[in-house]
Length: 69
Image (cartoon, rainbow, N blue to C red; front, side):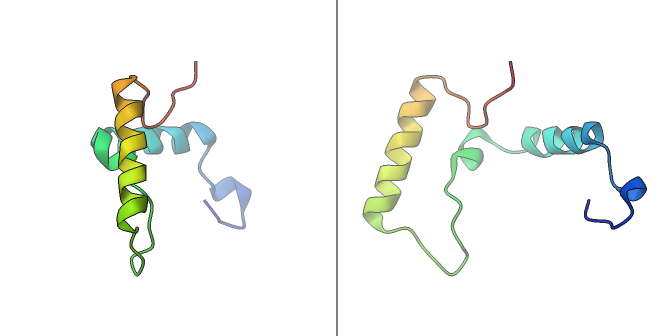
């Protein structure tokens, strides 16, 4: 995708197909997991806050990754 020659780059349709296949292979809670550097960890309060928000979103039926309408 970062090829200097634009003709060698994938089209947006190809990129979206790849992205959708990757997302389909992941569970809902994996997609809701916080993105944290491997050397860092969330504090207990931060982790509780994050998962409480995610639980509320899940109960409300909000998807982890919004879909275009």
